[in-house]
Amino acid sequence: MRKIAIRTMAQREYRMIPVDQIRVVVDRARKQGPFAVNVRSLKLGAYFKPILVNKRHLAETGRYDLICGEGRLTAHKQLGKTHIIADVWDVDDATAYRIALSESHATPAPPYVRTPGDLRAAFRRPRRQRRTTGRQRFGL
Image (cartoon, rainbow, N blue to C red):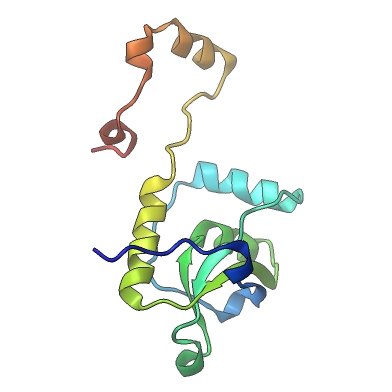
């Protein structure tokens, strides 16, 4: 498997891109609870890391292909924002797909603590029962 090179900050290209100029290539369903929190945070002015887009097909289609950040993009659209900050890459489709897959699997599962009682209960369990494996985290 070909490795994806890590880019230095000087090699990165950040741009403000119109949200209607971004094409979602792989659409993923998301849970509404965590998504609503992201929308609220964005509305309050929280900083979100830039989305990742591919400019490989920009000349042909007039649109960037989204690699990572569909939730952030959707939140921007929902709030009526016209532009979003993006880290612009130029990679082939297979590499873009591998980056998107690694991003979705690297995202940690949200903590399931909704009340102080949930937190106390979590810490009353023996330490070995508190840890979750990757299989549990991703519902496998």
